[in-house]
Structures are given as C-alpha cells and as structure tokens.
Length: 402
Image 1 (cartoon, rainbow, N blue to C red):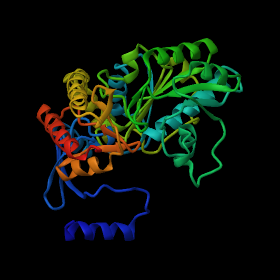
Image 2 (image 1 turned 45 degrees about the vertical axis):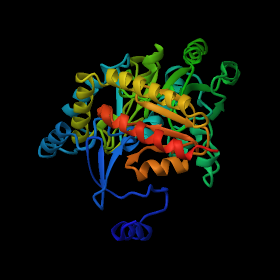
Image 3 (image 1 turned 60 degrees about the vertical axis):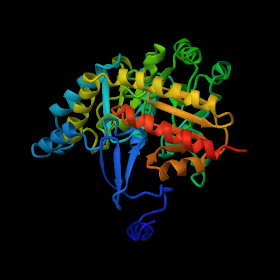
C-alpha cells in the first residue's frame, strides 16, 4: 500500500466509528464503470456502490440536472407542494401497478414506511389488531432496529437486543410453514424476490406466486423489498414482474437517484388509506434536487431499455460463468441470478479469489464467504464483463483446491 493510502487509513481510524470492514482501496474518482484510487490506479467496478450507480459513475445527464436544480431549489421541506416530487411520482408509478408513493432517504426508511403502513392500514382501515410482519430466512431488510428485526439474522442483531416485537421468520421456500405462521395478528408478508445480501438467491417462481396467493387468501398484505433487485436490475423494471406478481406494497431505494440518498415506498390507492396527514413523515425525503435527479434516472432507464439490456447481458455472461465451471471442475459450484444481479458461487471459500480480482483491477463483492456478487452498472460495456470473466477464469486455474 502507498504512503498516501496508509495516511488516509490512519486518518479514518482516528475520526470515524468502526462500523465498516473497508476494502483495501481509497477511491478518488469515477466515470462510467471505472474507478480510480488515490494513487491513480484504475479499476473496473462490478459492484456499482452495491447496485446504486446503475447508470454509471458521474453520469453527465444526471450531473447537468443536478447542477441546474441546485441553482433553482434544493430544499424547502415537505410542508410545501413541489413539482419535482410529482414529476418523479408520475414517472416512477408508471413502471408498475402501484398508484401512490411515499418518498424518503434510504432503503431502510422505505421498509420502515412499508411496515408502518401495513400496521396502520390493518388497524385503522381494516379494524383488525394486526401488527406482525412475516419475513423469510436469508432476508436482509435494513439496519434500523425494526428492519434488523425483520431481517432476523443473529449477526446483525448482536449487541442490540431486545429486538422490537412484531416480526417472525419462516423458512424460504416452505409455503406450509408460511401458512402455519399467518394468524389474526399478521399484517403482512415481506419478501425479496431475489435475496441480494443472502447471496443472490431468486425465489422459486411457483413459491413466490404461492406466497402472493396465500396472502390474498388470508387477507394480509403482500409486500416486496425491491431495494437491491428493483429498477431494471433483474431484466424487468421490478423483480416481481419476472413472476407476474402484483404486491400491495413495494419498497425501493439504491438505484433510484444513482447515488444520491433516495428511497420510495409505493402502494395501491386502497392500502394508501392507511396513511393520513401526520401519520408518517420525513425531513429530507424527496427534496427538489434529489427528486429531479431521480426523475431523470428513471427516464433514462426507460428510454434506453436498460431492463432489456440487463436481461440480455446477464444471460450471456452467466452462460460464460457456467461454461467456466464445467471447464474447471471444482471451482464454480453453480451460478444464480436474474439479469445483472449475479451470484457466482464458488466451490470453496472465496476470499483469495476476491482479493486476486482486486489485484487485477476488478471490484466485486464477496458474500456468504463463497459467493462473488456482481451488481455492475446497467450500462457497463460488454468488453468489461468479458475482461472480468477472463480474469476470473485465469485466477481459478491457479486458486482451485488440489
């Protein structure tokens, strides 16, 4: 490591709470699917801020919108009507069956809004004392106390007990376990159609449809967390559209404003009755600047059919990874994902492979100890995907177990 990098690392140690395990890179600037560190070294970015900069770093069209809006209006609070919010809402809602939106600042806040709406809709509109949210094993729904409780994983709850009440988990894929868990206290079922943090695990289509049908049968809300898998990532604008689903409540964030803090909870006219003036709020959510950038982000995604591109490029590169596994037995156990949300599951612990990829100038994520998680910009050049695959194949030839 260079002296400059070591100095930055030491400076952070003295200034910031230690809540992150940093990668051995200090990023100085970005453009498209490229990043450069403080020493000028170039990297191909296949993580895109964990599915955030889906239009690439420093997108010129978005930069122009942000600059113009910054000189017009940035923030006045949600006490005022703001045209930028309405433009965004119209465009975002046009991508699905949802008809009402609530804007916030992050994915965790979007899920908090979904949880609060489900409870309040049941209690104030339906007149049922229902409050429990059921989630699936392997889920990740955020880092607030409520969303950590919804996530249901001990490693995220360590040191924060007791968890808030009203959350229950059932095994993913087991419809009878879900049927047994739903009771008079159940307000909704919250699922990720593709579990990202869990290692890029798509739900079985028949199971996902059965979950929705069971929610309809039992009169509870069917809710989907689209924070990582949404916004063209899986080959459709929303991952639930791959399975023909129509959830009652949808949460999204990450890619919504291509790097600016932005989240949304979307729902139907009926379920939106659960919120009234004063029942939920946010100070910064959907300020004029982030709304303008988010509106342009959605416009570009639709204009350039980035969902279609994700489907085509994802299918092509996943076929390459599968062929690689067949060529090099004992290296790649299997490949899973949808679109450009890809998990390359290694047949052995992958830290050395992940580090070797960084050493060669390729940034991806390692999750669940053995899954190389790829979440590149939806605009990433085909040549960059192929270069990554070439590097991975070369590394696997030398790193596979004897």
